[in-house]
Length: 145
Image 1 (cartoon, helix red, strand yellow):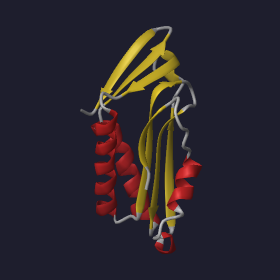
Image 2 (cartoon, rainbow, N blue to C red):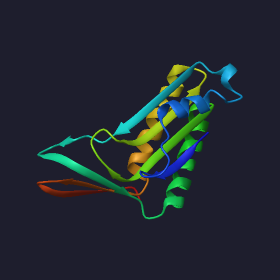
Image 3 (spheres, helix red, strand yellow):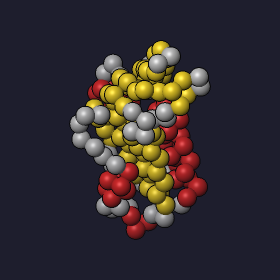
């Protein structure tokens, strides 16, 4: 299991890296599904063409800890084997990776449900500040906290 909050300029971890790590799990013999999600920067928003996006969190360690709790809760709730999450912070451009999730489970149903829950819970419950910068101005979105 990998749970990291990484500065955009630091290490790059990809979906392929997360899958490779999950396949090393001692529970791989009991697994029949891996579902993944890669959230990327959208270049077009309503009434705006994004030039760049800046994503921050006030406390990187607290954010990591909150994501770990979300992962543990989803593992228990859906009885899946492993969940890995990487959330990037910093400055981003269209197509850049922001948020990666990979889930290893015995069956596709609960594995997909766990993936959806982690995505939605991190999006709405973890404290992030997103600034969408365009020629039309800056739009700030606060989440969690």
